[in-house]
Length: 391
Image 1 (cartoon, rainbow, N blue to C red):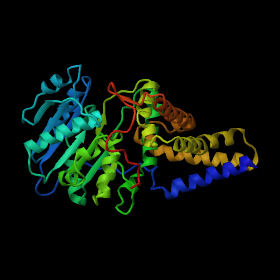
Image 2 (image 1 turned 90 degrees about the horizontal axis):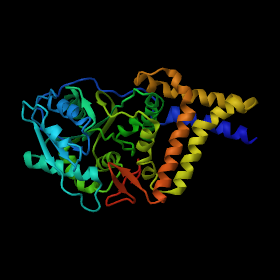
Image 3 (image 1 turned 135 degrees about the horizontal axis):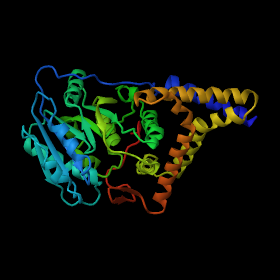
Image 4 (image 1 turned 180 degrees about the vertical axis):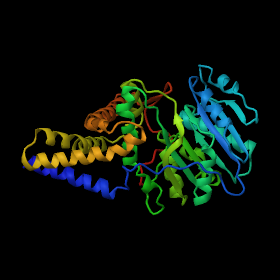
């Protein structure tokens, strides 16, 4: 009887997810290359960089080479790197004199490292361009941008009157570990932040992808600037939540014009990426952690177990739920140019992500906290992280 109830519940959950959860599983939206109509506003690109020697040269070269018809400035903040990141950035050819590299100051208390670097970059942008009429483009030092990327983002913001346009960049997907685990990262992100709901002004759900965020400078000022986010460890979604709460329009989609060049060759690399903020997302709550583990088991793992080891109706229901879950994953795999056969491993991938989430909680309660770029954060600092759809 218990197996029948659980298998039926799994099917019902999947019916809700597929038909009533913002079409999270679909392939789009994806912006096509475009150019802004009319006058092109000023754009300042801000790149926080800490120990990014392997990728910063390619990133900076792709940004100074943007085919943007308006005024463009690039500000890279070298956040006390020890590997020559700043020198590599300064050596990139810059024929249009767009690039400024500044050395970051020591991080004050209550600030996360990345946001402190971003705040310094935004302050430099304000010094160079006092007019608040343009945009700031926030991106990471491990991303290569197509020459049309910035123009496309600005064209979208201008055409739809949006305050923020963000894209999930294409993630590196070369190694076996990346084939198995990286598409699921994108898939689970879309499950947490259904793009259609983020883009719907009537919905309270807000989200963004930190590797590519174009934000109107007036909207950033309206929410209190980067200072209002200073302690957030999930800074991209916290920013989106503040902008949407202030009445600003959002867009979140997938990108074909920007690609991460950071490799994740081993499962442990992806584990660290997930564990870094998984427990932060759960607001450091053991109760939410328990609910998440139970939910992951019921939605992703139980259907496979029912299908393989059940009998009668539970087995049929388990097979149905398992089949629907795999089918929902196929558009993500195709976008990553991978075979749909990888969907067969989705229950095992869910086990991995569940274990990484538990590991994130264990690290927190053992006092290790969030560790990133040789910095550790054991508690929320300053302005806290937002949970999607919460006020």
